[in-house]
Length: 332
Image (cartoon, rainbow, N blue to C red; front, side, top):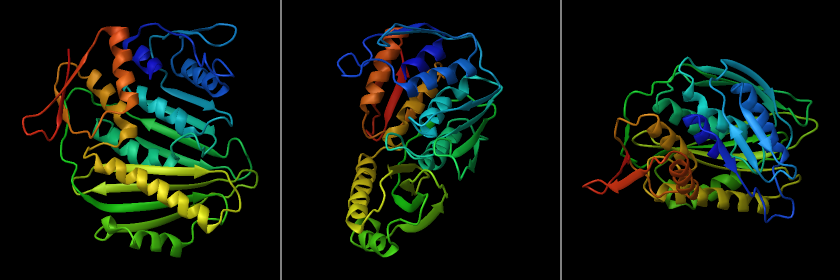
């Protein structure tokens, strides 16, 4: 998020003591790949890294390219890079088109389905109505088994937005994506859902996406929930393990559903993973007051506010509305 703030305000930034207390200090390979992607999207950017990789100086370029093609390695999934691109996509008024090829799934990142069915719809609500993604699978590569094309036409950033009513859960999509036939038995999933009273009046749908790959095995489960007011929440779990038994799947289902309902229970209109998109949109609409309801601020949001204040002096002012059903955000 620090690099995003630097790009947004066109100000240089210095990041020190990167993993300074870790046994393996400094920038990781996947972060070097992200720097390479930024260099393609924003030509003229300057990166200075010290010898042991613990200090990074970044000076952003002046404009974003319209079209970019980039390949990423096996260290992180496409979702890691796609999320960053969506952060900065609104900075180019004319729109942007990016083609990425890399790994579809990773235990460290949100699933690609979460990006497609939770983050992209939020992007559309916030002005990117025509944002779309095309996905292509490669059955033979273990490191670049998926290609995607992200198309972000002109994004409106002039109007303030209001997202105030969370509603109640009405629809729940359960998506299994995998490279082999080892998925949770339908009977196991059905029994698990029948025991949950919160889902008794929810419209349930199951989707099974098999993406054949001879060299790379993965399994992902993604929950996509939609409320009566159109708010969308998601949670997911991915693994590379083979020969998964029913006990393991039961633990995965418990963990994924628990995180999903914890997010719903906070009473917000946007799931915790996507709060940064809201703050970026508010920063881009300084003259308007936007109103939204969130359950609680995540640690990422708090650190984002600190970085914005440190770099620009801009302060977010957050307080409850008179009915205490929403938070009102202003920029001071």
